[in-house]
Structures are given as C-alpha cells and as structure tokens.
Image 1: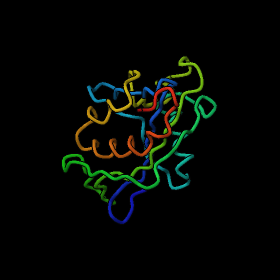
Image 2: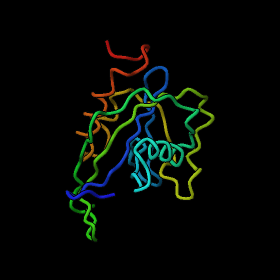
Image 3: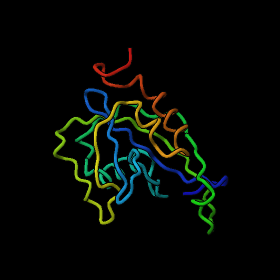
Image 4: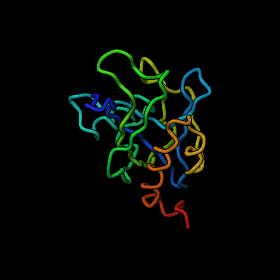
Length: 161
C-alpha cells in the first residue's frame, strides 16, 4: 500500500531477549544487516502484518513472542534515488509502525528458511543500540527514533539506568 505521498506502509520488528539484546539479521547474500520488516497488504491491519512478517522472516509464531510495545506514529524514511521505484505508483520510501517483541520461547524456534524466498541467512543478538549506528545510512534516523520510543518497554534486566 503506497500512500498519496509515495510512502509504502510497512511494519518493523525489534525482537529482544530477556537480556534486552536485539535480533540483528543479515540479508541473504549481502553484507547488509537489519531488523525484520515488511509491507502491509491491503487486507491486513498492522498487527496482522507484523505477525506475518515475523513468521516469514524468522519462523517465529505469535506464541513464541510477547508484544512489549509499539511506536505511537508512523516513522518515515526516503529511499536513495537509485532505489526508488520508477513505475506507478511511485514509491519514494517507507512509513513504518515499529513493534518491540520479546522472545518467550527457545531460540530453536528460529527458522530463517520458512519462506520460499528467505530474507535473511544469518542472525545474532546484539546490544540494543548497536543497530542504530550499523544499519544502512538512510534507515538510521528511523531506527534511532524507534529504539528511543520503545526503550522504556524493555525487560527490566536490560533497561538503561
């Protein structure tokens, strides 16, 4: 779904463990790391899209996670010109609602290969703020905003003091 301004509706997922580390995933065949994210289909609400993307990109089901929080508004980023869609409708970037989830099951439930076209080929736990400085440059502000808005919802053992 692309809005009148050219932004594609999307959900982002910050998955943490009980130590407040976050899942950091490598895109298939690239040295590019990011959080799971994906588009919202016309027949979905953002929560449905979040759970679908969680399954497609990590193999995790709703029973494997607990929702700790979500951003209170859309966060937007523009794509570099070379990545913008030239066809109609024209997409200039993403507008995202972000969800903070906590893994409540064993890590054995991760399966990056459940989709016919996997998004990721490797994942690891990293410190909460690591992604804000290590994601591709055009997503950094959105990552910083999402992490800042959701930090107060982290498990008590990992929250900043």
